[in-house]
Length: 303
Image (tube, rainbow, N blue to C red):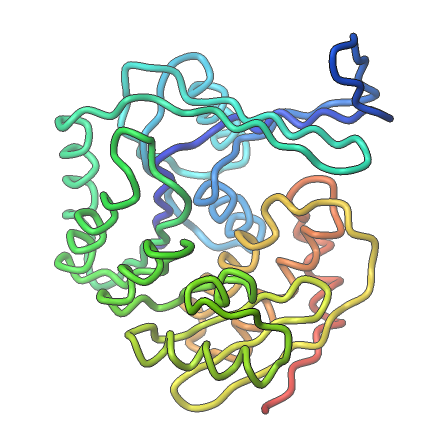
């Protein structure tokens, strides 16, 4: 079973309007509300690939019920720890440029944190856990150094989708996958990365520090997979970019899900690219049908 851990879920409230005028009344042209959070996005894409998974983390209040009701409606199993305060709302304003206003999230108590540890401690070597996204502010991302070892001690594999120091810390636990983009990779090493050869070089450094597989997403310039055996480049696929929210999560879902299902790292990479690209070209997370359509266009070459 694949478990996804979202420590700070949200309702993603997407607002569309022609122009945003500060200090004035603005009227939206359309809006959508989705269950959000990086791990939850991974769960939703896994479900669309037909891969069973369980979403866990912290949830609370009427906003939390919206999230769990949405996941239930999609047939996604949940095992959240209930908290006292409301799950946050993140506002995504699409008016020419995209603007985000993200909520802070609830306060997590020690008892609630221990309840999540109890869930993770019950896993086994048959399980894989995807840890993704930031933690509530009172915990800080250092809490992953407490949670990830619990899953590893239980025998589970872990995949980690973080940035910066949190990503570097996760390498001590030999994650199945880490997936920074080229800018995040550059920030880790204090360099600007634009050339594929340089991106590959620094991705190999992440591999040497403990990761089992490293994917570097490069937006419209394709994606790179570095494994202990070889490096692979996925050529960019042309299309209209509609959605930057959830594309990376979709790639993590496609890769992790297919690798767990098949053990074929190349096929996993192709499905990861297909999922990420399809979401980029969609208003919400990509549908199963569109992912399969994009998969037919994925071209991967060994470097």
